[in-house]
Image (cartoon, rainbow, N blue to C red):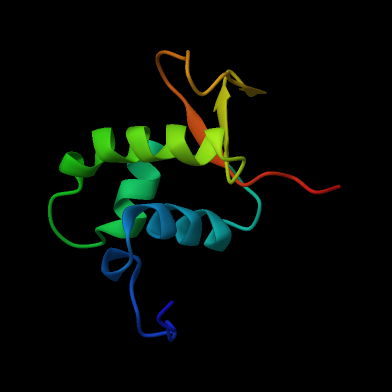
Length: 92
């Protein structure tokens, strides 16, 4: 796996790694898909990332690498609708 330095932006990473990197920088807070898209594509059009972020988030949630929240509660990654937020799993 290639080493990333502090100059590597989230846009240079595969989408799953970019999502996790943006969430790691959030300091334990949950983020919406548009917030994550802005974090990945800091310049330019980020709207095209919304559906790929959702698909990737579902796969990451099914693998236990992130949590999808709906109305403040963890949602079933294979069956959720509407507004959602993403967060890293808590290990407390």
